[in-house]
Length: 300
Image (cartoon, rainbow, N blue to C red; front, side):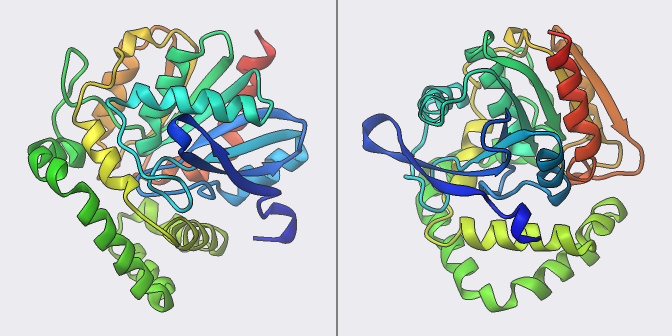
């Protein structure tokens, strides 16, 4: 990570009920906006180096937004994933963003889809990278770790905050060991993710994002898991904007079949299979994802 690709600006925006959401901007200050929805876990800096450089080279403004319970964002549990869009609208208006494309990684995928439903006149395209699929309702599909979370829903409902506080304490305690622990995780990961995590720029991005995002609190992953097991507040067919969906065919966390399942239900979507890639594979193809979204934008 270089000085040029570090966040250009960071801060918080006041949303409903006096709560705050954190954000980080990369790239050009007045370029076309790409709203980046981080994974679970993750935070506003979970934007790969290649995407940051592409933004600088192509006059793009990438904005990463913390969900509630990450870093300086106020902890909060929405009734459904769609509830996030009311707060998102306030952040976008505060930052002067009108039309935009959105990218959702893994757990950020449902939030990006929700934005497409909430702002069909403003969202020009959505890029989903190994996104989570619904676990209940007409769009539900079984399998994967999120489905396991559905069985733990009572525990998540009761223990969301204490578990999140425990995670925060654990991350703070192991901060000095963060780098070797990430190396250990990489060695235990499938080949596709291991290749990615062994790249110095990706390792630096993950460490920076994890340690910054968990600096004050880390309750967001628990809230995400709970909301994934509820109805999202919209049906997949409600997403009318163009969607491009990248998914590794060796994904060990969210099965490739989940991507196929959701894309088949989206009115205007294309599935891009990534042979041999696992869950983090979408982070390694920024120079494919961003041009694809810009192509849709230009054809508007």
